[in-house]
Length: 115
Length: 115
Image 1 (cartoon, each protein chain N blue to C red):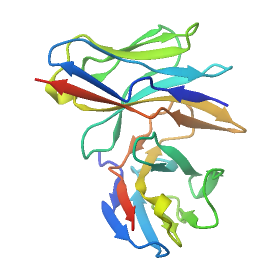
Image 2: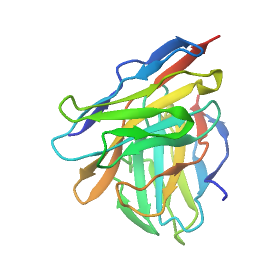
Image 3: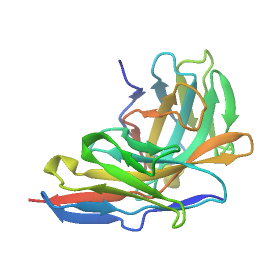
Image 4: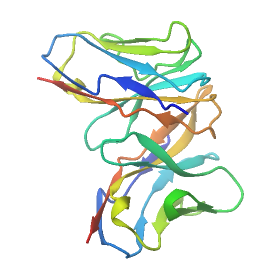
């Protein structure tokens, strides 16, 4: 079974530039998550999709971050404009459904450095 | 609000020695508890989970964890570690926010195996 695919693996940008990350979840997984993991901290949920609808985006900084999952499969996360404090690893995960006992499968992440 | 505390940021241990990684959570309601592992340059992977029933949960790679409701703890143990266990370990609790369940994560514990 193919895992969660993310690209790019690494990205370095200057502050105020824009950047986009892509995620392809495991086939058949209805739920997709984007997390931000700052060095030394656990992952923080940015947004959760159920198929192509947003379930939870309460911790997404909507003035600069946006995400979409138009066809209920792939997803993109965009930051515009980037700030220094956005430097982190961005993790995408997927699960079969939203049930709290369902395992989430994670991609390898995209390490973003904002200089 | 629910929270997860991993008491040690790093745990050094000799190869073949036992190890315990500590995790405490705060919650006023029933919870589901998880341990994930992140090997170097890889994504997060589920080690084990507690949903209900027996308080001793066995996971992959010889790890086990014990749910202690009175102490609100979910410590991870392995009787004999191997160099391949070098990784960062994250404890997480599935908590309800409004109408959705969300994983609340600890800050992680780096397990350092000394030869």
